[in-house]
Image (tube, rainbow, N blue to C red):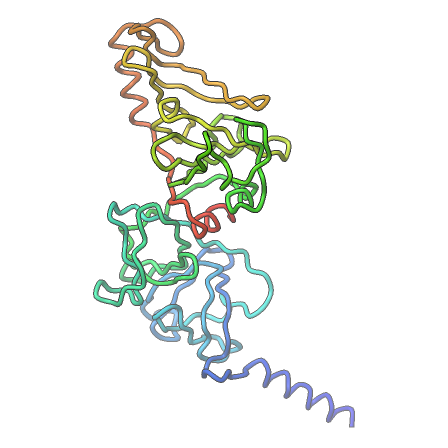
Length: 333
């Protein structure tokens, strides 16, 4: 009797492990490429078969056959092919290795239902939109998610080599779920309550970088209308929002340096730090009453011009359109 019960239980386990859902699929699984960050989707169930693309660990696939076999037929987006079962997981936590990209095309990019230029458009993603890259087809189309949307964008329209610093501590602030200390007034306010002279700020874009060189991340938001920027700085679990006027901080570089101007004869490049609720500016290459200084020392025009050219060649941070989808993608990492 006991043997029959055990046999029946084993049969049930086998049946459950290969249950076919009402839509004809075998449910979903997650790519886990193990020591690599991507796994091949192949045309046939053969290691020598042509690859249809590479998909990152953390990408969800729809299984079209039993995952307990050596090869599993899967669908990802509009693409169907085969993946080795050893690179798929039905349960357990899989740490995503999907990179973040952003739209670099000046006119934005069309998100499409299939990986070709004539496929139906899902939406147009403006320049500065963040996307999560789930994989890339053999024809160089990225399969991406942007908020609740998924689809395909051409490889050349997306910059995927982002090395963004950790910034999750700002997520709740950027989503207006946590208040900040507004340095202008000392009041505790939400980001969407900050303003000046009775007007509330509207934000256009944001960047994540170590602005003050303290090995910690700040977030810079540009204020619509060209008024300037709000800088979010975190110290001792307290986040402070600093208002920096447009002429005081412009052309920000990835190393935290920036240009400033208070007139044609008084302008240059500076760094900033935050201490005791105040933003402190430290010019290093500048004109003071028309006299050139380089690294804080009086200089000649030739050395000053060289320093200006060197500053211009520095890399800039990535600026993302300020919206809920981009905030969640960028700051949740």
